Length: 284
Image 1: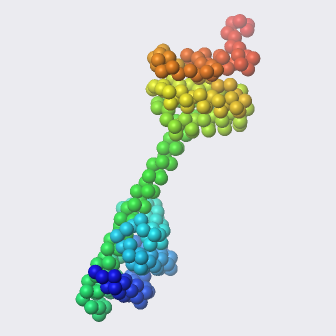
Image 2 (image 1 turned 90 degrees about the vertical axis):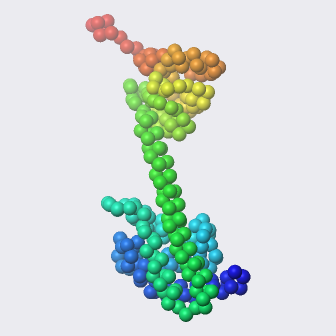
């Protein structure tokens, strides 16, 4: 198709969409795609979506859902998808295929030359089909954001800060210590150190499956951050297997105090605060 023919088709399509804007918008607003809104809001959203379709036609980006022309379309589709996802039943994806029928029907009723009629109908069908692809991409992006948010929430829940005594905090680490969990642990610990005026923070790694160089770096960074906040950091729960691994890897925890168990670390913390545990019979 020559450039002149392409320009002619696009010009006729833009004129068609503008001429039948009210009629197309009215039929679109009556579909299930906009049924969750009141008539006025549905009409506004249908009109905005139609404006986006017109812009796509003008820019010739009917097959590219990432094109700039789809910006307005994506905004409206994102609103529709978000609303549908909040429904109690049924698919969360609006069935935008129903929008194609009224547009193509009105286009076919026009008295256009055969070539323009065919190419114009093809362009309209293409852009309306691409709406489904754009909607799917929006849903996938929203799903990825939801998964990331859930991972962050799980990281926060899996790194609780426990108060063992006035001025003594402990954070039990379980499973694999990756960058996300390490960051969450550090932030939670520092916040509690400030809030509770803690002087000793215990990092208990009894439940950590393995310690490598990366995990050791995470622990050291957390210990250094706690020290900057005025609290001594103690690492507890270093089992024999982990100790051997750390020696083999040449991991040096520097000046950070270490203890074999959480109980030992707690006793060390009490000594740091100038206290000690005395058996009841000795007190008597």
